[in-house]
Length: 265
Image (tube, rainbow, N blue to C red; front, side, top):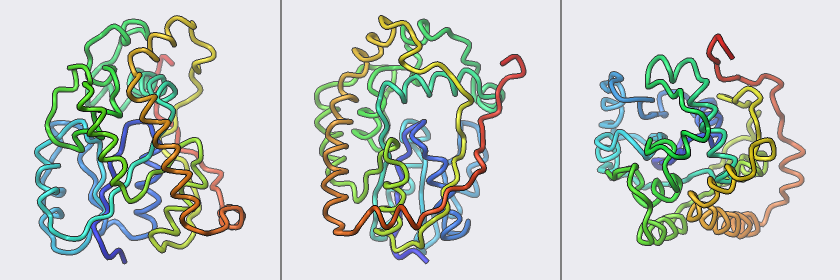
């Protein structure tokens, strides 16, 4: 049983679904309360749970459904805050292919039929600049994600990042999960990967000029990622535990849940 609220600020395509499922397996669905996946979803169950007085694991993308974040931020229980980071260029590319190929997204959210170059040029909030910086600067508070990130956004994102109780790194996924289990006194989980894209071009496969444009568009996110890596190293050292031993005792599931693609992919 958890003793505090756990707020997981889930940046899209940073292994967040795998983390949510892991914690649900550990604590049970009665303690998990994920924000709906898109506008127009029935919010009644989420709101009912949000009014409870027992600890909850609250998770969701901070870049939408701001009224629901406002509701849960009013909860008064002690709070453990966390997020996961991923190399911003890899995350951007993964996000593009997820949104453009996901059968669920295109059926229930919106059709993302832009080419990769068109997505970079677009003002679509999912493909706008520095999503990680904006999300961590606002943490679910309202903002217009089509407007560019500002120096103040970057400053607030750093401040909020340093206040987080836990930062995971997708590129260090197994170690991150082991450290999270240690910090929350969970039994070492069996790791299962959820919502994984089918094979798609990496930054090494794409036109170099397009990748450079993505880099320029996410300059704050790249700097924030470097800071997150530094914090992660400090966090790992401060636990005083042998991560090699932890990793040796962790199990990985052979089952991987792939994103359902369009029929024409």
